[in-house]
Each structure stands twice: as structure tokens, then as C-alpha cells.
Amino acid sequence: MTENRVCRRCLLFESGREDVLASIHEHIARLPARDRAAQEEYQRRLNVCKACEHLAGGTCLKCGCYPEFRAAFRTQKCPVKLW
Image (cartoon, rainbow, N blue to C red; front, side, top):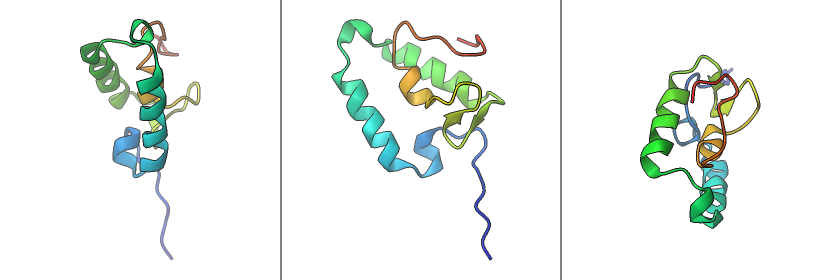
């Protein structure tokens, strides 16, 4: 019997959910530039999320979002105010 384990502190690209990640990247690509976070800020946010205790299997356990998507929006905030 194999056990399905949730990847703690993994973003989607690390959790094997390439189908969801591809969809998120498509949506991000369609965002107007004025609504997107700068690439450096996006990466900083993801680094914060990766270290957060509320991240599991590529999902924020506080709000249910995919951090790779939320972090892409210039005006979005972290649900626990880490960024």
C-alpha cells in the first residue's frame, strides 16, 4: 500500500501538479502589465510563501489560494500579512 503524502512547504512547481501550474501561468500571462507584480516582487513573495507554515501541496491553507497565482497580482496581499 502506497501512502499519498502532501508536500509541505512546496509550491505547485515542486508538488507535481504541472497541469494546475500551466493553467495558472496562462492566466498570469493574460493579466495586463499594470496589474502584475514585478518579477522580483513575485519571486520574493513566493520565497516567503515557501517558508510559511500554512503552505501545503502548493496551496495556502489559510485562504485556499495557489500562491503562484495570488503573488502575481500587484495589489494582492498575503492572508497572514507576510507580504
